[in-house]
Image (tube, rainbow, N blue to C red; front, side, top):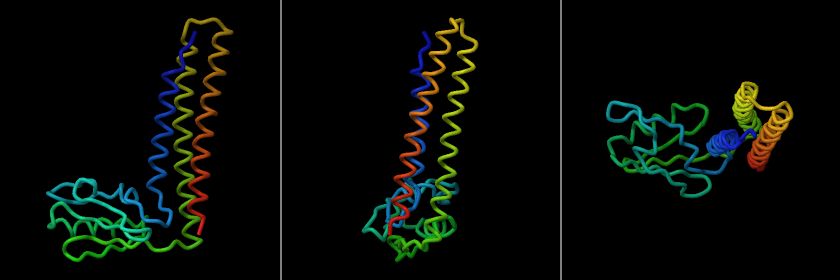
Length: 180
């Protein structure tokens, strides 16, 4: 009998990575994970924003960033401004950085959904890679033909199951993005 628990675990990891990526996609509401990809030059090296500051959502349209070290405030504001994909314009008052989240235009919403769909494809490629590795392993295994066929069908069913989860998560996120 061929054990598919390793493939299931790998596919679950691919789906959870995809869901984490979807959290970073901007929806028009302020969310601290929006800035998760920001790297700040501090202490002579680039560090993730969450290692140099505390990021909170003050309300639905404002993120407040409180640096652990006030000397990094300019670097934080510059790093956010430099990430053109976010389209944000932070302002600092010497103690905190305020990042207003502007309302999304219809065109920008469509562009965000398009970018998110590229992440869907990357996640599905990861699932297909797991499936292909399992098929190669299955081919090399010393099992009967009927066992191999059953295991291959089980792997295909797993791939479809996790692919459907990715599609459902993307559909929910794109509806959230397109909702005014």
